[in-house]
Image 1 (cartoon, rainbow, N blue to C red):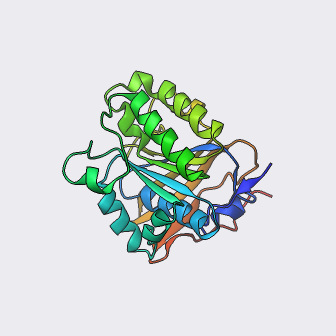
Image 2 (tube, one colour):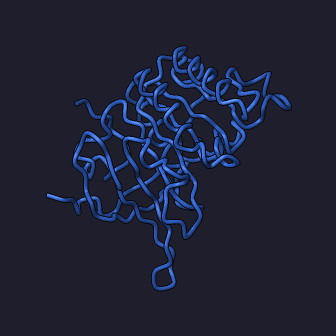
Length: 240
């Protein structure tokens, strides 16, 4: 099985080479854990290696996403102009000047079919290999009973079109789950990011709960957010 390198230093090592191609992975974590940075770094690494990518903005204005990425030196504008990167605006619903600047806009977020149609078109237009949906929790926030069903519908589209994908999932600080009832059963992999107070200091850690198609570390690994993105600081602690 082909594996897709994440570009996050230390992570590919504990995944024994990367994420299996076409896997749909839930990237779950509470506030401040680095979920968006993680997913954007994943896309940026792909762009640097000729793999086109899509970022679906559900929680932030697309302009803000571009600015946030640029702070790490990840300027996606040239790749958009080359047709290697696309932003799907699922945040503004076309309000304001978005219609002038954004090519792919989800007008009605309550209509999953519309959301999937826009996403599918963007994937086909640029032949996307990597997709990030940030955050997928928004799609079932008011209808948690449909969480697993929505995940499975997205998975059929994303895997069917050959994409390796990260679905960002928001959880509360003390939540033990992954951001929706049954979602853990609908995805191929789960990476959970945590932020805990240890001896009066906040520490970020990562653990891979599951990943179909590859063995992986079962240990918890600490990581830092640097000016260049995420760095796993004890990535060599792996299961032999």
